[in-house]
Length: 180
Image (tube, rainbow, N blue to C red; front, side, top):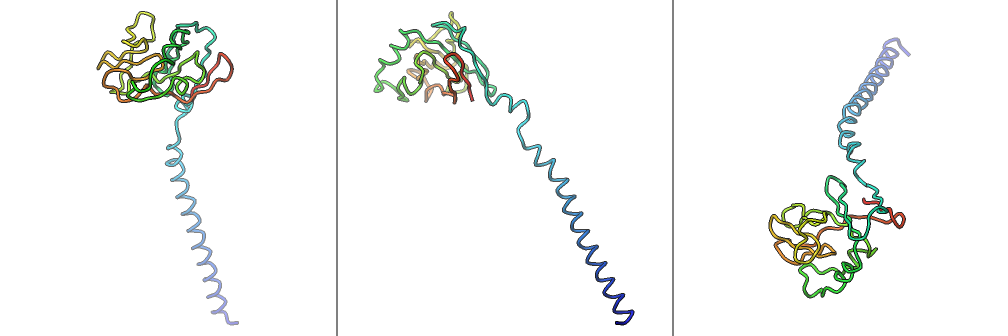
């Protein structure tokens, strides 16, 4: 083997090493730039904290209602009276614009849990406080455009196209629910 061929093989090996090293460093650099861009798309910690909330219902007496915030929206929780439950169950689905039975909307008949945002234009209906106007059907009333909801949060009169939404929730115990 001559000195020239040894030198040629040696410089080809150095060249291959430099090319591979350059591509490796470029890949590492691209990953270092891309990682913060991808990571910033994850939800913020305050958003994750709002993903679910637990509500203690033990202090809520029959006929009382509370409003909690979940994902930046008001959620209405009402401990319904036997009369409210009876009225909600007696309604004919033929009279409904968006027919749903009370059993579908309130698995635990004593409590109704609803997203408190009118389905017409996103207003917050009245009916949570004892002195509020509750509309013709005794549930909630949106004064902005006149939507009336019954004891199950079903639209009965006015421009709202659908019932008040029901958030995903579960009973963790008799008096504790987890929304979200």
